[in-house]
Amino acid sequence: MIDTESAAVQAAGKALSRVDVTPAAASFLVELTAKHGPLMFHQSGGCCDGSSPMCYPVGFFKVGAVDVHLGDLHVAHLDPIEVFMSRSQYEYWKYTHLTIDVVPGRGAGFSVESPEGKRFLIRSRMLTDDELKAFDLI
Image 1 (cartoon, rainbow, N blue to C red):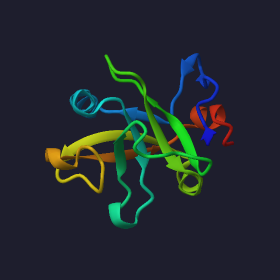
Image 2 (spheres, one colour; image 1 turned 90 degrees about the vertical axis):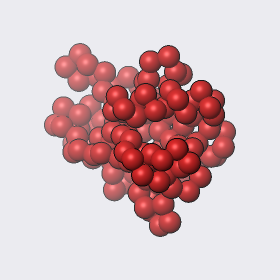
Image 3 (cartoon, rainbow, N blue to C red; image 1 turned 120 degrees about the vertical axis):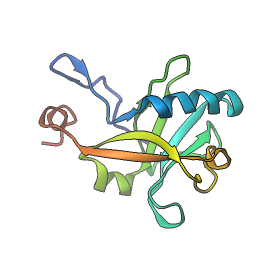
Image 4 (cartoon, rainbow, N blue to C red; image 1 turned 60 degrees about the vertical axis):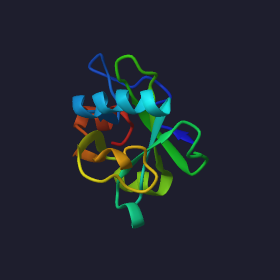
């Protein structure tokens, strides 16, 4: 597994991350953690699930050498929630910052939100020049 957050990346004195979570998704993660225990995300690469952030109880989805640890989501009162992506997909997305959000709808596959009438989705933006430099991408 590659860890893109192995060293605290700093730019202008501020810790940077490749991932974040909206307040609505953070609140929903608190609910889901109460039901399922500690959680993690794996950003799906497409096919049957589209490009959905898949949320699993820790240990349910096995990450390995082909996965990249993008970073952790920090939600009040929860342990950090790790976010992963396959290395091949990371090559396409490495210049983007990902924010996990939640909207009404049916979740995909085995993601824990599937029966809740909500689904996680990714909102992305291009990394800023400072972030690109901090992550050694330019």
